[in-house]
Image (cartoon, rainbow, N blue to C red; front, side, top):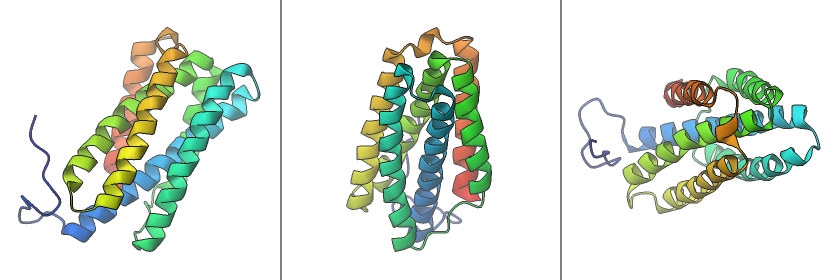
Length: 186
């Protein structure tokens, strides 16, 4: 695997400058936390107050805290949010509701898939930031730890027993990677 390039070090002609690279990180992370919140809202709309919804409520609260942090960064750093927010609003809720309609284990498989991709995404970002942006890197590392915990929670609550687990998680991982790619750019 190729070593991730630092934001300033190893810059090639045509690469975004430091400010643009950080803005893209904040933009995509803001979009991702917004999408995660919408996924959990969709799941909770279907599952309601059932006991299976308790871990989802806890994860949703953490995602809201992450979103609040990125809401502040968007304003502080004057970062343009993704133009795809209306799409992520609808798609996130629909994904959450659809997986919850398949059952609590499918909702957990959704979390497992999304958080697997986000774990990798945040790890790459932290590596790229290096020591250049200590506060942003610390936030990303803290949120990554929460996302890893969410994945473990999902697995502990039967994600692997979801109907068509392999197909479901592969599709969600692919969609998550596409959303990251698009939100970084649009």
